[in-house]
Image: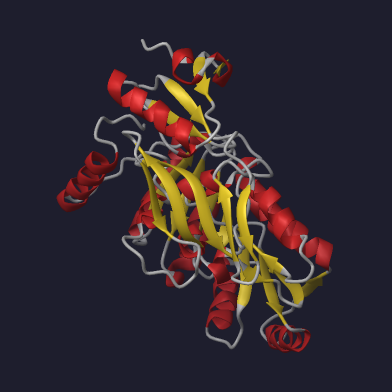
Length: 382
């Protein structure tokens, strides 16, 4: 075994759960570490805030954890261009605090801190985690405009840039988002910011059946309404709609919403709390969590299947994508729901306490292998 303390220094190596944890101070030290790992045949797993550790199967072998907790700070902030560059280990909430503190420009990073206040920018990107704001602003792939990263063999590289309209080179950042750090280690990220709307108003429907939920969501989808969030929690029967616009624009949209159903309007703190609850619920229990997604037309059928399996669906109603939270790790519950989702033509993703057999076509397998060989030829990142 390589003397890990000899690579970056003894002060950069600690122990956690019988596993060495190496904490590089910058991307140059990340490169040195990966070069040494390639040379000596080590395998490393990346760790950010540790909020989504269970979102992928544990590797068969891991010699050490690479922590990004020292790769923090905002590198560049250009309100006039509506862009920001931050290091990957920076917590999302700290980035938000910096951006929203600028009262002159009134901007915000429209990434939700999935996993809580310790969730980092790199962790959210590596897991492609998206919360309620995905409905209007998209996933991390829609917000990231550039990145710096280190490949498995220690090469420091850059993709994209710091301007929103950027067509320079291959968009490798899109490839790294959602890869769980298995292709390269993201060290720095450029993101686009959005203006903060004048008014944010939230209304809630308390539905009694999956069909009622589906009908309400479909009416919103086909109406001149642009929700920034359209959330559902079932079988609680909660559907929440958040509208962000000018005062007049929000009022007009809410007036139309009230013609669809009997709705409760929430005050600003309650509306914010509801979105935070949606983010937190998949992490607040000890049971299995399964990511699911189906076609919009299958929303009612999905909600019925979730209730029958004894789970709770928390997610984006219009996109019909979110998490199913179970009260325990009973594999029969997961199997029943998995069978129902597949019958609806939907997708499944293991989150926590769930093992799902994923099958890929030979073409996808070849492409995946080619990407790994190009970015991590020695198989260092696991």
